[in-house]
Image 1: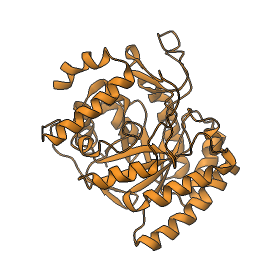
Image 2: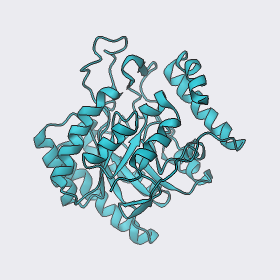
Image 3: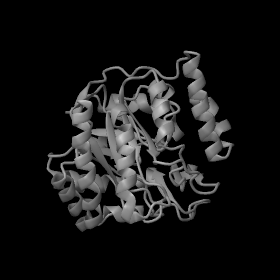
Length: 339
């Protein structure tokens, strides 16, 4: 109810300014011990990637890139949080404006470009957080690192976040870093996943704890690409796949104000495309590797559909912008009895 009152004010602001203000508000509410969400009744734990999630609903990466609002976001009732994408070195991202609302379609276009304070700052923020729930850390490469050296950046990030993450997501699917999606092609993917898996095994021995690796993929893939990704995931023993990131398609929004802006499209228009990729991928993996469903979840029904398509967990982001904390409670309730 409170968010319904505040949302018109936030939507009157530039989208990125509203985003920053919302995170600041959550930090303040947490510091003052103010309630921001109601506990969803009937939530059931589920084991995925060898981790025990208190419910099936998580926050997708991108909302809290630097891990500055972990405690405030955890108070919304999520079963897990994913922070980042983080890169080895700080970078400003693309020039503003770079975040656009399409309220007619409950959608967002972003071309943020992995703006973040760097992996050392993120780790410092994680250290300060009081919340000790399941935390995913999403890693990427700096914009000026040549694609043939991308593995160096992912390895640098993995080494620094390993001790603080419940799982680590390898983001190769943002459309806003030049040539990043090239890493989804078979030869590049093998060249990336092999050293990351080797590093994971070494870090597990070093820290005495196995931290799963998840791979986040794009929705703009054909059947051959999806089969190749599924094969690579099996071959390199990746622990989960997150399907999907944003789309470069503008189908259904091209006529809207801001519909032609460059960047990745998320929200309601992404639902069918992301769910189709999820379905195909879950079929190819045949239950051998868990899939996390993301894209276009704006209510309990759409979250349930992701599970029915083969996902074991779901994540939300854009829906949270349009619905507020009530979405988390609704999605937990809608997915709590899924078997």
